Image (cartoon, rainbow, N blue to C red):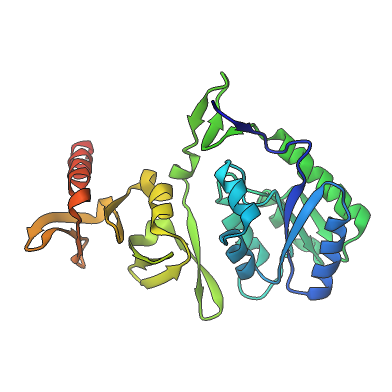
Length: 285
């Protein structure tokens, strides 16, 4: 039996993320959001870095939504001008999610409205936030959610009602936010050469260095499998296109990656699947 999940069920309250580095503004925004009858819970963050961490956290509500194919939150109400990663930059990360939350900007600068709508925002609210204006923005959020098609857990719903694999994220360039000296840098997936498991974390290796992120390797394997990444070991995920050699060593097989000739071990259980993928990719080429 396939359980379908609409973008918004009439009896389900909205989960909203509010982001503002000015605490008085954040408190006012949160009060207005919580005063609207369709909002069930408001998660708040004082900057973009905290907001991104919250969306990747072990929050029970967020994880439950991800499991049934919904975005981590229904909507994001965010300031634009914040220290470190700006609201605009943060919103580009949100837009890369599949499915993505609905975006509303709340700021004191009307001059940035054009850029906000270019990012797909459904509304642009000037500070100070007023209840009637936030209520109007929430109405636009609901309109957007109601216009989105129903989904099945793990996929979209085709016209005939059968679940299909939602592979739109495969062709898109996903980015991973990482912390660097108090600032947030966006690492594109295409820049990652291999990934090493470190407990519940993963270390991304690029040509410029390495970055530790709180994402289990198994999750990245699932998300990036369609983008050319392959598991070669319980501790390693690599970009298949970068493998230049598969060779037998004393302890088993190894792969060599790219011009820098990085050598990584291949576990016995992953050897056959890796050989099949390498043969398949060479034939495709």
